[in-house]
Structure formats: structure tokens, C-alpha cells
Length: 389
Image (cartoon, rainbow, N blue to C red):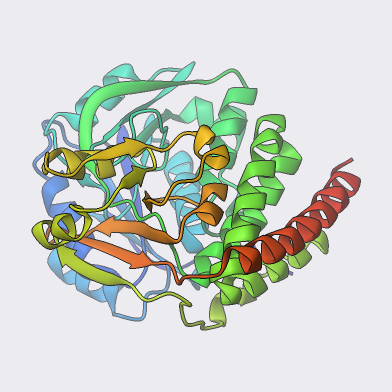
């Protein structure tokens, strides 16, 4: 049985300020320190509350030493991002803060009036969120500087800490909407690195929690079909380790297992990441007939190299396969129709492209495996609707 997150140790700094900014962290002392230092340059003052999820790199002690003016809460164990935010959110409400901002330890503020503008646009009927310059414009990442009034949290409840990691923001955003709370986008910026490919542990929580969100919210149920099918096919073809993980995530969701013991397991990636500078990556693509999935960061990269010709992927590509190279950043069925596929993982801090190339698999072999995966997908969906009734 999974237990409610609890605090093991704390160092409180009471300032009687109306605003609390909540930051969970786990084994990431350096980036947490950098984020705190940058937050101190904001145009208004506020309390910073850091929740250390029982880090093993001595984060709690080191932050105590470096910052005498922030509140530090040390969790009894690692409760994941959802559990860390839950602890901070509950603490801030009990202390009576009027405005509570939920963020991440590596969400770097850019505009110095970011917090001031968030508070100005936040009210009893709407939360306020800024814009991540590393992501597409239409995403509401409410746990990256999402600003809430305390009464909104009292109405909708606390974050679902059982989700542990991934999908907790999706659940909370849908819950806000179900209570009629709007999400207001503020034209202020921050930077948070966004990866598009994750290891098996992350995939476990992604699958398990998406099933739970689809059970709770009709809008996510519509999303589930494409989400699950593309992953099942991709994992079946290219990432057998993740395919095993996916089946375990589905099984544990069906039996209502939420103890998160899965995080103790260690897996190797089935694909090997490579890294090239912008110029090297562009040179590799220059002479190829390129089809690209729509993504702000990929297109921004390509715009820097006008000598690279490409077309944007559309669903019509499924019915008109070409001898071309596909550059993607998500799981799509079109992967079946291309012999050469590069998966765009990230742009790292050194301005290099992190990617991997999918192994070549014969077309007939792809179709047989995809058909097998599709049958398993149908069984999962059928059982999901039976359980979700």
C-alpha cells in the first residue's frame, strides 16, 4: 500500500510574505542551486520552498549551507515530482500563503518580472502560466511556474501524489478545467529543456498514468487511442525493453498497483544516442530527401541551415511512402514506411543535437510485427473500457 508523502526534516524561514514558490528536487543539486540564484533577481520578493525528495547527493545539507533565506523540506523518501509538489503545495496552504507557484528545479526564469506578472494575472477563477521558449506555444505546463491562489487549491484539491512522475500535470490541468478554472497564458518566458525520448522507467509512468487519466477524463480517453497504439508499435519494432515495461505498466494499472516499486529496476536503452554539433548534423542531412515531423525546435534548427531542403510530414505520407529520410521527435505510424529514420531527442547545453538512428528492418517484417502489436493493442483497449465502465 502506497503511503501519503511525509516530511522527515525541515528548516523553515518565515517571512510573512504572501507568495510561495515551490520547487521539488532529487539528486540535482547544481541545477537547483542555479535556479534559486536566478530567482533571487526577480522584481518582487517571495518565499522559496524547496522539497528534497530524499536525495542521495546531500542536496538538503548543501542547500542549507548555501541559502540561509529559503525554506527546505526533506521528504522521508523519493515521492517523485508529484509527491514533492504535493508536500510543498500542502505546506504552503497550511502556512496561509495567498499565491502558490508550482515549478521545477531546472525551469530557468528568463524575464525578471516573471513572478510579478504571474501574480498579477492570477485570481480566484484562473491560474497563470508563462511560456517555455523550448517548447511549442500551445502547451500548458502548469507545473512550470503555474501560479495558483490558495482558494483555487482549496476548491480543486491537492496534486494526486500517487501518479509519482509524468502525467500529474495533465491530471491536474483537467481537474482545474472540470471545476471551471481557466488557465491564462502570460507573455513571460522561462527555459526548461524538453526531451522527446525517455528511458524505460519514465515510459512506465507515462503509460500507467495515461491510462488513469483516460479513465478519469473523456478528453484524455480520446487521446489514449493514438497515444497507446503508436507506442505499442514503436516499442514492438525498435525497443523491446520498453515493450516489456509497457506491458508491466498496463498490468499494474489494471490491478491498481501504485506502490512505485518499479523505480528500483534498472534497464538499458535499446537504442544508442549520438551527439553532433549543429554543423555536423546539418551536413549529415544536407543531401537527403527529408521529411520532418512538425516541431518548433526542429524547424528552428533547420531554418538555421537554408541549404537543407525538407517537407513537413502530414498524414498523407502514410499513403504515399517515398524513398526519403524521416526526422521525427514523436512516435508516429509513418515510421513503418521509411527505411531511414532519425529520432530527434534533444538539444543539449553545448548546442549539440542528441539523436539516434532507428535500425533498418525489412518492410514485411515491420508489417508482421506491427500487426501483432495492433492485436495486443485491441485487447488492452477492450479491457480498458471494461475496467473504466
